[in-house]
Length: 259
Image (cartoon, rainbow, N blue to C red; front, side):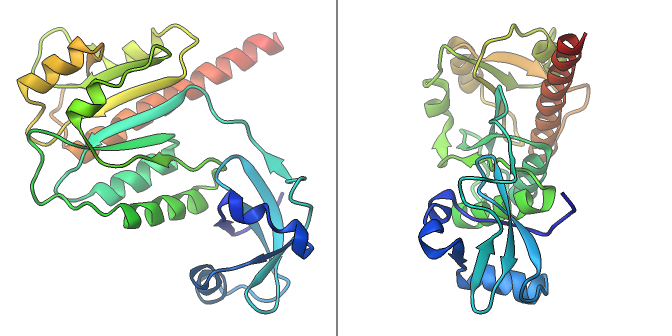
C-alpha cells in the first residue's frame, strides 16, 4: 500500500468499531495529533495499527472520528508475532533512557525490562507514563506492527530469580578474560527457545554479587566488543545484535525453504 501516516490505537478500542459502522472515536490527544500536527483534513487516508500485528486503512471524519475502510475483522495487513521474542533488561541510566527506548523500539526489540541495581544512579528518572508515549511514537514512526512490552521497574535480584526453561539469558559485562562475544553466542544458539534476554548494567558496572547471582541462575556472561560502553550505547548495541541475528536467521531459513 502507499505510504500513509500512522496512528497506534489500542486493540480493545478497535474491537468496538463494528457497532458504530466502523467509526472510531478519537481522544483529544489523537485528534490534536492528526489535525494539528499532521494537518490531515476530512476524508484524508491514514493507517491505523493496534500494536499486535494488524493494520487498517482509515479516513478522517467530521468531529473526532475515524472510519475504517474495511471491517475490523479484515485488516489490510497482518504480521505474526516475531520469534524468538527479543528482550532487553537495562539498568536505568542517569539520563538518556528515553532515547534508549526510542532507538531500541525502532530497531525491533519486543520487550523492555527497566532495572534498579546495586550501583544504580540515584538521579535516574522513573517516568513510566512518559516511556509509554515514547514507545507509541517510535512504533508510529518506524512503521512496525508490533509494539514492545514495557515491564514495571524491578530490582536486579528479581530478574535473576525468574528464569524460564524456554528462554535463554545473557548478561553483558566487561573487564573479564575469555568473554564470548554476544553475536557469536547468539549465532551459536540452538533453535526452539521462546525468548532471548540480554541484561545491560549501570555505568559503574555490575557488582560482584549481581554477576555471581546472575550466573548462578543461568545467565551467560557475554561481551559487546573491546570498548567500555555507556549503558545507553550498550543497550542499543545489544538490541541491534539481537535483531540482526534474528533477521539473518529468518532470511536463511526462507532461502532454504525456497531451495
